Image 1: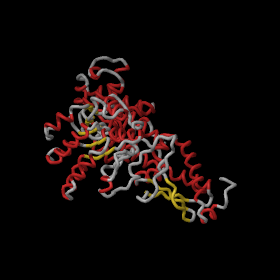
Image 2: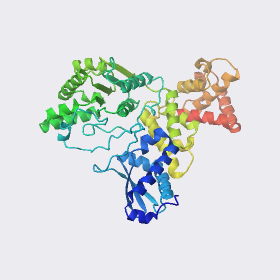
Image 3: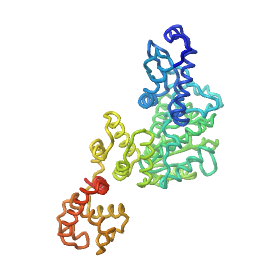
Image 4: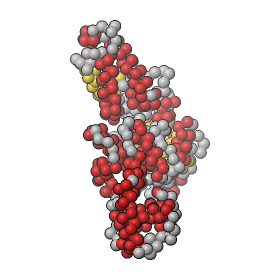
Length: 482
């Protein structure tokens, strides 16, 4: 609280804008020191102080997504800091910036923040025709979708399955239109990070300034092209697209079967590459496997750098979950992260969504995250990933977990390091399958059913005495059960 300030209510009523500006400068500095430079630039630097109404100050943000995020993550802290600066202000209202509102201030010594939606959402088409050749370092919001400020290189978790694609994306962001990297073609399955890398490239290029970026899905490209035909403005549409420095098209496979749109994209592609502009494209398959595309287009797409993103490994999924959990500020037990990483293996987006649901549930109800609550909160998602468990799968998972050979499950070895995991596998086979004891015994080297009975009894006893061991077995069961 600043004792030297004039009475806050009189100052607000009298229109002392400098009071609010000075207060916001101090608040912004406090937030920056608390959350760090990267987080501040990503989420908070775009805030613009708005009007004051009674005991409420309005803060403006360029997009609804940013407004909702700032409200949920920083709303209480912003209210507290405003009240410290100006006691008469008791509440903070976050609103989306309208086209006429001033753009967020930028510090000359800072890296510019991403500002995709600070521009008018739907400017008149004639506005582009009046653009000068000088670039303004922005996202062409009249042409394209805004970049998501969450998707940067800093927030992309790198592992063996995606390290080559990541390196290629960084190269393009640092030196667009480099020989051998134009076009850059990223491909891989759903939810593996293609869109994240494309947004990260756009964000990095914009930081350099004087770079015009157009990012859109192939579907939006098609709809814009159709709209141009209907409005008899195809020439303008071509000029708009071919005036950008970087064109990024996501999910190109959507153009399969759309011959006219493919032809337009082919000519746009050639015009941009010939002019030394960068093109980045993503799809679910490599150019050679996109059989529905014209041969000439597939050939051109494959003439630059083609980088695939493989399915994630367990280690990469754990790294992603650990990073997301740390950023949330909510304690998520390692057992829960391992459980999720084992259960949701094909889609990183779905994996992150599952973790977000757990964190939201914990915040809403004030309950700690446990294996039990995880299974309860995510029952519908986990059910979709459930499959019939086999004894062979149990043996493989247990062998991997306890670092023994799979052949040890049916061997005659009786060393404790082998016998104990084998007993765990028998116990889980009894719990998770409908196989009889003799059938289970036959899968473990033709052992007698009494051996299986002894194993089940022994593991049950150990779980009652050893909490850590019980947690290990329970985690294995949860990862396998249907």
